[in-house]
Amino acid sequence: MNKNYFLELAEYNIWANQTVSGWVEQISEEQWTMPLVSSFNSVQETVLHIISAENIWLGRFNHVENPEWLQATFKGTKEAHIIKWKSVSQDLKLFIATITDEELQTLLQFKRLNGQVYITPLYQLLAHVFNHSTYHRGQLVTLLRQTGFTGISTIDLLYFQRL
Image 1 (cartoon, rainbow, N blue to C red):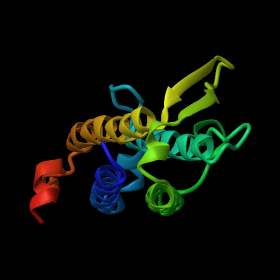
Image 2: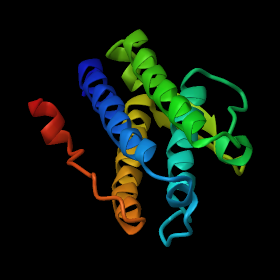
Image 3: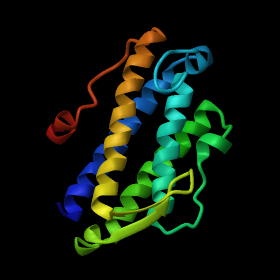
Image 4: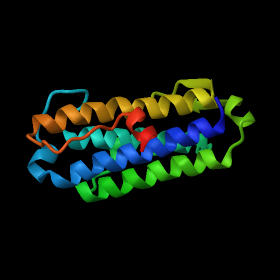
């Protein structure tokens, strides 16, 4: 794996997040907060989880001592969620643009929210971040369908690579 691979994943992540946020822009406030059964209890909570995870990892990558867990603090509107989502996705790409292939192998020490300390190669953490977001975007597809939203298209990586 090299920097270019992760830059491509970052581009995909931006595109997929923008695609899904475009769907979210079209739903009503009722659909946004409608109680649903999944890992999180609504479209809003799932979107906020993706934003929170990307944001906390970005903080960890930048050696922020205690990066903010937005899921515990962020109370913004749907529009504010979307703005933050797009911003964090762009910032992940900017971070990757600053590193070298060699730095992908470096070990990053970080603390989980429960205080546990881990040491993991940067490339594994980047792969995790993008995989995690993909996983929860897939949940959003199902959640949006449960709210009655039908304007869903593909967000598969292979589709993105063929654009």
